Amino acid sequence: MSVLKNKIAALIVISASLVGFSSQAVAEDYQRLLNMCIACHGVDGSNEFDSIPNLKGQNAAYMVVQLKNFKADTRQDKTMSKVAKLLTEKQMQAMAEYFNTGKEQD
Ligand code: HEC
Figure 1 (tube, rainbow, N blue to C red):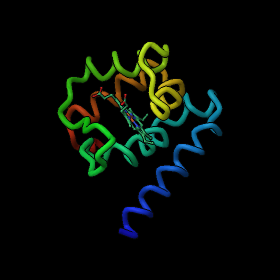
Figure 2: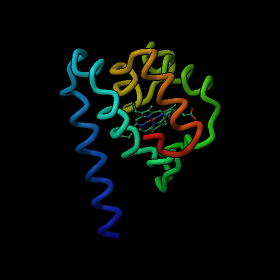
Figure 3: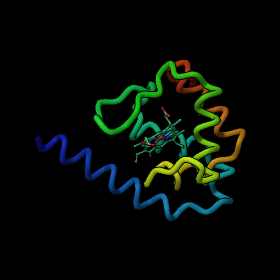
């Protein structure tokens, strides 16, 4: 139970810190952004949160379309709408490939 509470607290901190990103930092900091994705979606794209989709093995082209939709507000979510606005198309593609393979590539 307390483990779950800690995780929820961590998610809240992550969400709150999204507001602090400047667009300049975003372009330069792919790894930092990816770490943020991983905090919710899991290091290999699979996670234990009921409300967060597993991305492991998901079609990369589909994920890029979803990220573009979040960025354009044609798909809306409290978190993802903010997150996607920080991403360039190149970063979306790299992240989609990362989660599609479902393993760390570093
Ligand atoms: C605070 C938690 C959180 C963070 C951080 C986060 N996501 Fe998400 N993500 C979600 C949730 C929740 C959804 C489901 C949104 C919905 O219901 O529409 C989602 C949905 C998505 C989807 C669509 C999945 C589908 O099946 O349609 C993609 C792709 C995605 N996220 C990628 C990312 C990437 C890439 C990052 C990092 C740049 C990221 N997410 C960061 C919580 C998060």
